[in-house]
Length: 364
Image (spheres, rainbow, N blue to C red):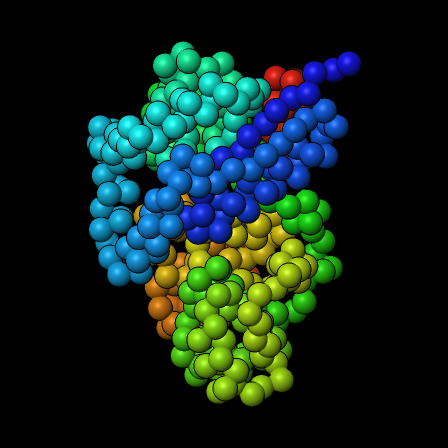
């Protein structure tokens, strides 16, 4: 009888992307083989029990009130390698991680969060465990906060990210261009699914969107436009817009259960520049306007998209309206973005993750 393989996926609830990617990976693994046991664990719930609520709450308060302080630390870690030490400086967590893997035997550990990758890589470097460690980078970045010598495999969004990592000393053979893992429903788009004039605003989990109702009324005057606004957890914004906007071509939602269908239908999307959302747009060939990049990783995503002409950025409502209008009027730029999205779709090898878990060495 074939031995049962055990896989643990570590994630963290800093935003929605890390957890969503972890869930996608779990579904992919479950579909692969019957003899694989896979479990998703929140890294801080397991190894910082009793402190996790304070950590998550403190993070949300920090990015809400002092994003510049967060960004200062985020960028410093990439400029000065020694600063990254503070990410894994909690020796209590190190002891808990070591004790956990003395009891739990596992074949493969996957991390979708950089601090988790750091602690797990330190354990690997100590030679006290023999599991394979894979890190899935959930943004369009090659920042040092993700990069540790104890990591066996990296799964990244694009070839350019891989090149940056190799330049920073990561072995070429350890980096696989898989794209950021997204649900199967985002694959296999068809141009015929696009609804002409459909403009979708995605607020992400926190509902970060333009708040002025007049802005949406202005956009709704674009000839042939249909507007969908997904406010996420921002109940106050949803109520404000519902109370003030009464137009047939504007639909206001709290959450959208069928996000793949909505993206596949949208002619243009405006949203937070999170790595997962951006890659979902690439896979559905949907133009994406990156709205108000505030955090370090969002700014890096914005920089990547602009450098490679994958999308436009907007810092405010005026720039957002101009970017939307360009999608309807500038066919040359729209075509360039379409070509760039197609290049990424054609270059990724998402099957590499499944090959690794199945015991076959994927080609980097």
